Image (tube, rainbow, N blue to C red; front, top):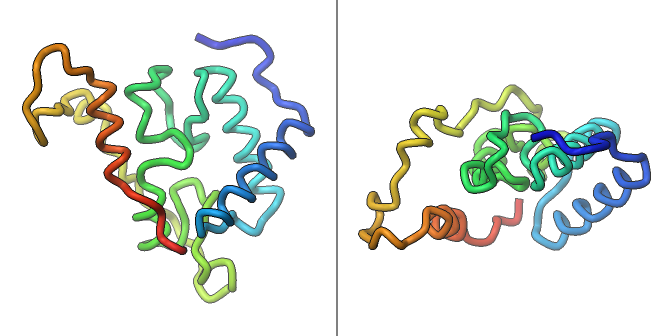
Length: 153
């Protein structure tokens, strides 16, 4: 379901870049120091927002279903674990202090997101029982909220 005008302007890219940078610093995170690289990722976030209505990670395939993609809406569910273990999130938008200081080099980051067929079989009943009226959205929200605040990476 592609929406009109998916190409963001340089001004829109700069605005979101500034917003992400401010938000990262306030949360104890660091954006990748390569500004042009980050601008490319920011452009991808804006394109995805126009296409899908949400900022899905530009390095992953989105399903055009916000509930199904909650785990890859930037910042994604896997950011903290990836930054801690590998020095960067999957798309390398967020990096650790060690990477920022040049003390750690970046390599490839393996995909932590389960395959689509596994994600489709996710069930809230794995963690709690609920009535049929209990929404899948609520279950996804509980999983995302359980991440807690980010570490001072």
